[in-house]
Image (cartoon, rainbow, N blue to C red; front, side):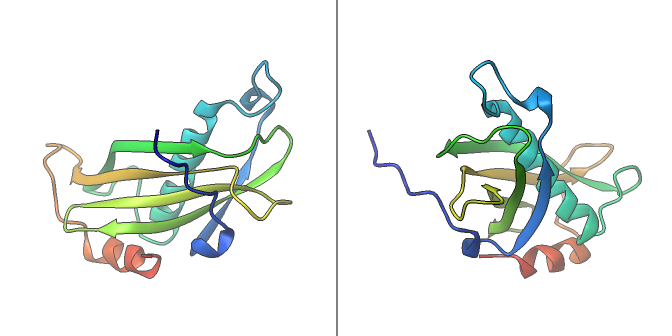
Length: 145
């Protein structure tokens, strides 16, 4: 079994999004369930695409689809802990990118979980791959590791 990488620190990320935990995020073991972290990842990267990249969820001709994702868990968090997602771009190519994301408890300096999400940009209607639009690429370049 490969050795686990240590949890990252906030300094490894260039953009942060607040995450509000909900009562329903907790599971019977008293901590936020693993599936909630993928929702946190999705919310954080889409927030960046909307706020910084100009993505219009209803009208942009291009959209980004998730084609792969992963998450490593390091420490439990539980409702009502205030969290934040650290976001960066690990790899940027012509039509796709790999996000690096970590979830931090506001009171702890190492990640409770971290992972990656791969987005491919496609035409909203045909779902055929497209080049990442210039305005979006500029925003992504600002947070590329």
